[in-house]
Image (tube, rainbow, N blue to C red):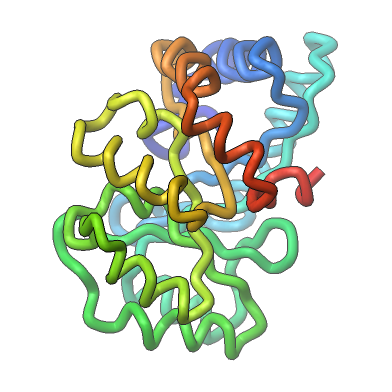
Length: 220
């Protein structure tokens, strides 16, 4: 969606990304623009408008790619209020995607996961491999979150070392321990397309596909 967060900046760039994903084998994309109060003040209405534009782009260019939209929420009080009001954008079976501060483990994490479940949502943590405060080869912290019913969405580019080597190591550990339910691209720019293609050739991605644990196909 052009111009509503740190992703594509124009319809032309959106088209390039959609065409690149289709060429890589994708047949459906669920865009998840950021909702982060004070930084990305997106609303369901604005995201819906952007989605309609993406669908029009696919139609105009005869691109056989299904496109839907949800959001990636930042873990803050605005998000908590939306959960209480049951006004969050979901995908699939009431899945709610959210992210944490990268360098600070929120004290309320478990409580909010419980509250989301209590409100009928299935919480999904975006890029769990990118939070250094969870990194532990014994997977203790990750295991505690799984026990609370939290699902994990891995960024494909993490498997290539695109972010850092510790993040790639954590991503591999999550795959190895069968803790990943969703795989996302985290695509923002055209330069990310070759990284995603590289990730799709990675042995850990293939292991993830063969694990039978991925739920991406249930969203088709």
